[in-house]
Amino acid sequence: MRKQKKTEFIPNPNHYYIASFPRSGNTWVRFLLANVLYGGTDLITFQKLGEIIPDRHREIGRKFISEPNSLFNSLPVQSVKIHERYSPNFHNIIYVVRDGRDTLTSYYYWLNARRKEHISLSDIIRGKADRGLWSKHILEWVKGDCHKKMTIRYEDLLDNTEKELRRIVSFIDFNIELPELCRAVRLSSFKRLQ
Image (cartoon, rainbow, N blue to C red; front, side):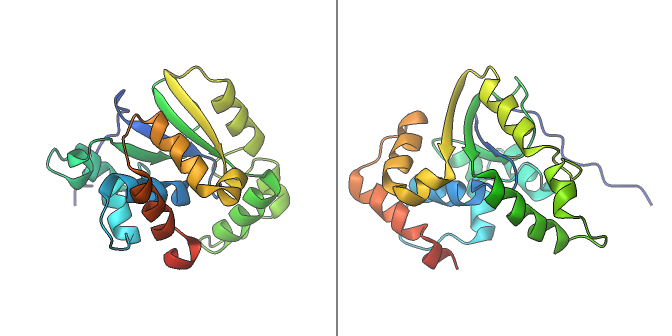
């Protein structure tokens, strides 16, 4: 039996990439931005989120990116989730960073819920998990030369979600009225997403 060929992923210089070390708030930023770009009053599900802002690490996400008639490609701004380390091939970056203590603890529980073999928190801290050192990931992106880049702190999103979402919307050059922005914040609240 032939192995099915995977859809190749090539960064597009016109796309915005929501980059982060895993468990840093990337999914929340995706929900906020998806509610801005897609609009409407319905709660966006995780499945719909993948159609609006695909996860580049999933085969279905790469499929949405590559299909010209996908919902992703019909939106006025295309954004993609990534966890890669820095590369100059990614031109437009929204980098999400979260306190390392919270990130690595969350990553520890998330990884161990999905692995057959347990990995210790100490090994994760030392960069022996899938994505390497948390600090190296951040430093490479922060110091990396991108065409256009902004950094969002997860803790700032918690403190003032509306203000930080306004910064993101301005960064991607998307026009939105305040009531729609507030609706996106409301629809992306943790209470609604549970």
